[in-house]
Image (cartoon, rainbow, N blue to C red; front, side, top):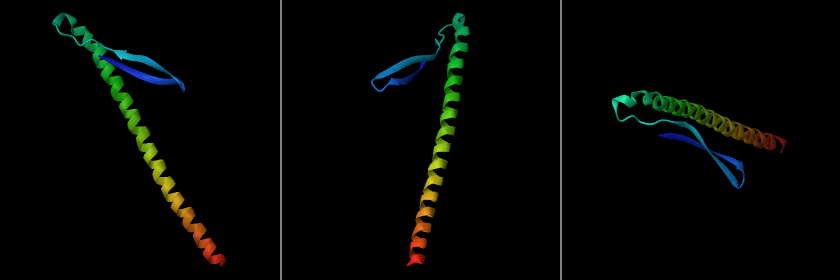
Length: 84
């Protein structure tokens, strides 16, 4: 099992990077291979938690932007009506 990432190096070039790798054991003698598999899964979980934080932040920023946009638009409209 391998966890990889892809990065944009230039607009026409990508980099394919191996982040973590683990071999799933199939016998008792290979039981120590579980450490690499667990490490891979923990890395994946940490990355997913980071992504959830970024998603939450983006949603908050979008919400604030909508409120600000509506507020500014309303204030400008009111100022124009008052000026007439």
